[in-house]
Image 1 (cartoon, rainbow, N blue to C red):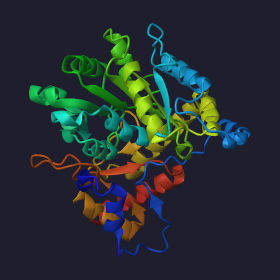
Image 2 (cartoon, helix red, strand yellow):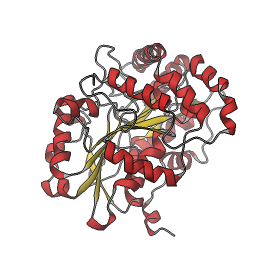
Image 3 (cartoon, helix red, strand yellow):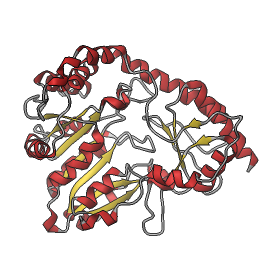
Length: 398
């Protein structure tokens, strides 16, 4: 057996199931799940139709590189979305379809990390647990960068020691952040791009929530956009990960892409060819339809804005929480320990939330997720508002 498997911790939802075990919530209250970031808005008809129209492709093996039409649709979208007209994405060498970014974020570390040089993989804390598992199973040591309120829930990259940067082989970013919704600004991204060139590490920027933001006039900056701004026209050491799960309400399609440094993607393609993870052709055609359409994404953002406004109003100041810049999570403080609050909320109100400490690690005596909870506003508007009212009632009963 792989000896690094012992490092893997239970997934947050395994811990949540254990936390809720034995509890009997009130039968007269329907269950409201605000714990899992699984979009529940309808998948657009154009995606479903494109998928149905290509079911004949079930009899055809797909290639790992994917259809040229899909890579061109992705390259066109990236160029338009991030203003890369001066340094347009090359669909042939700088784009690779993936079966959802979860598997790609994990696999990427396996292809990037050199096990023989005491490697570090840096990541935000709290974080998407895939980053941690990917680091351990690639033979690297995870290094956690706390995301504290006083720094806008962005890691204090200036506080990272020079020796840490020298050992760093891979930096996972998540902007907009999961669970905080914080967005890394352009200046910080530019500094990180230059640091990657100086210390020869790769940046893996998880931008899966980049198309859900509250201010329609201020879309989050992307890593490739920052690289182009500082003259890294070939996107050296920069790779971004995008998905249709959140953008297009299609988590079951398992469709995303990686894009950036052509040399890195060439090696990653080799890895993926052996890994055996080509995207089914019918999913590729559905993905082309999704990346070529923006109207459904605009509608999606409007629905989330309505939810944030309604939920914050329903909470009525009962929790210390503000709307994030992007994403679909709220990250409030809890009035008692987060696990106690989540357990009591389920027991008395039949509402499931995710304790913040299930998404973080305590380092140096400080746990940036402790005393917080993640609320995923993915259910219907009415369910989200009802859940907020129940949370308020629970707070007032404590």
